[in-house]
Image 1 (tube, rainbow, N blue to C red):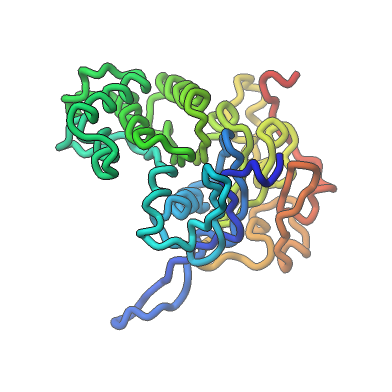
Image 2: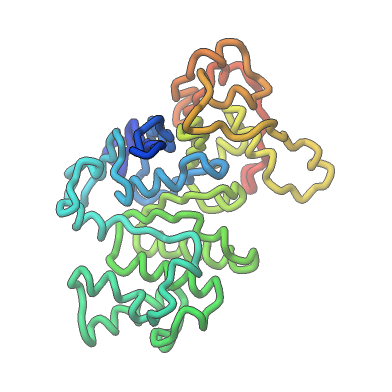
Length: 342
């Protein structure tokens, strides 16, 4: 895929939070939540961003949405007319048209909806704020959005407490779609839902993507979900990308030890395979005091002396497959079977 097909290209993205102490609140350190992240999202695809809690996935998504002003780096967004703009450099006034094109689906369908607002108010708010529709037209647009996500228009006068978790998330999806976005950042959109309704919401997201030609950044810690919905996967560890590949290739033949450990935790229906899980020792590295060299080396069973002193760059191991490991070509890492590839 050519660079011209990229809807968003993130280069050397950094988000550092100051650590302040003392009476005068002096800065004594930095939490490097995102530390040199780079990846691209092609128009019309779903890119999964995965990793353990605290690795910087959500912070990366919030930087792209400009909830946070990045400390450094570039977020190159390709407009519909082909012009490229750096979202990291835009002022609040300059960001206004792009806030309509890049929208968010929240993780928690309970706390993300205002309990004092009706569904009509919640879904219609982006349309009112941006002057897209008012009066009868606004009501018609909200009704259309509710139908599109599988809810009845008559529900628009009800309040969030009257809905189940799955229905609330559908309301959140309708709100995200209100302004016809091009890129949707889905931050753990099914992790708070019952297993029985997760597949329904995932199928809805896929249907909407095909119908509306959406592009997703799908943030998750659940590799089973990522395997189902994502075209490519980027793996994060302590603020850095350690591997990027097409989903089937990454699951079948990972090139980074951290990815191998994550894949070993994917639930398997065969109980004889459960003993093959790789249990990582120790805790995730502190982003305020990360170890020298490769951040993963204290927990890596393949670590060598070089790993302790030299940080591996993210490099292409084979076409379309990059990894940040000094010994990717030498290691024979274990993947998992991907349905439909036999």
